[in-house]
Amino acid sequence: MSRQFRRTALIGAGVATVLTAATVLVACGTGGDGGADGRQPRLTVADSYIPLPATPGGMAAGYLTVNNTGSADDQLIKVSSPDASSVTMHRSTDSTMREVGALDVPAHGTLSLDRGGNHLMIMGWEKTPAVGDELELDLTFAKGDKISVQVPVKPLTYRPGS
Image 1 (tube, rainbow, N blue to C red):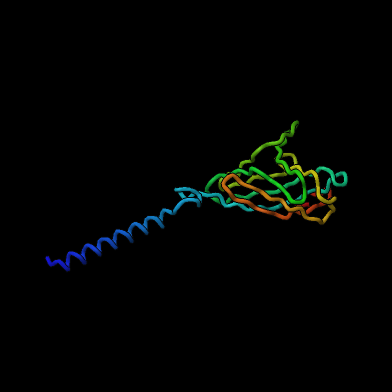
Image 2: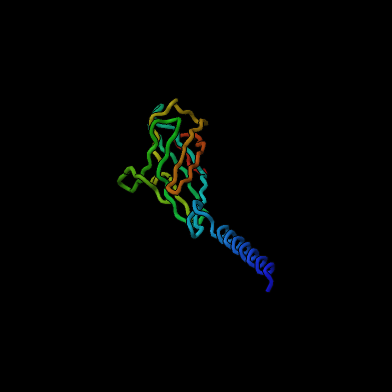
């Protein structure tokens, strides 16, 4: 075997090794995008509204649906607004309402914030809201997603689908 042939064979083997390693790295990913198994949440927000507070500038509830079409669970861990000094998450049952620090968003599922159940409490409005106004809500999720939505103020008696 000639010296030239061996050198060419070694160079070819080295190039093949580098290309194989690069292909494996690309196929496996480099992290930061849902973990090693590729599972990640895919979140969208729909059906948001705020009934007009009963007293001008008073406390109001906020309702919305978070849809997760991804293959990993997530949690809503914070809601804030540049238009209100306080937005808190609450869970209601037949007889109680309590503030919670997080709400689960299941994989391939939804988190519903609606009357009589999970909901937001909004206080300290920057300006007194009127029907037709929109309030910006900034939703922060445990796995890093942040979603900002413009939520319309509806009449106090508004019910979706009616």
